[in-house]
Image (cartoon, rainbow over all chains, first blue to last red; front, side, top):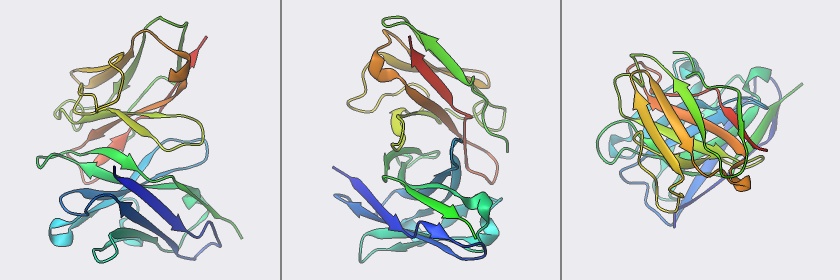
Length: 122
Length: 111
């Protein structure tokens, strides 16, 4: 059974860098889209971006692209999110998730981490 | 690309059926059969309940069903149960550079 366990700092000041890591238990990083999604308090879900094991290619939400880096650590079976220059608008619960497209196109997110509340406040 | 549009809330009595709509455009739902639905109980992570418009993952009760017509997808919960009370989000793959969009979310209340 695949489980995603995530961690990272929960309180940041404006202009700092958000850094979260997600460890994948019970499965390989191969052949899936490793994804970050966020949810502001009381709000809906927003796709941040993904990284694909094959070639390590990434895709990001254009609204965040200039500030986001998603990376893989194959040795430790984990992937990470960095979001630079955070503001109060970045306050949200951040989730890691596994995207599966069955080798075709258009993934669904079948496994999720527990979520990390990141608050940006001076 | 804008979020997909869902009704803010729907409600029903136990054993009734409720349907949640998810309206997109010809850039997402209208051209791709890559619509998924997620159930989110308070304080928990979303859980996949429907993928590829109408397929159910193992372990999801068959009272959950999905469909699509044109630019609108729908989730139907038949035989509503108290445990179905949660927020529900749709999602679709898109043809734009934002590869995935989510719906605005619908709160289901069991009366």
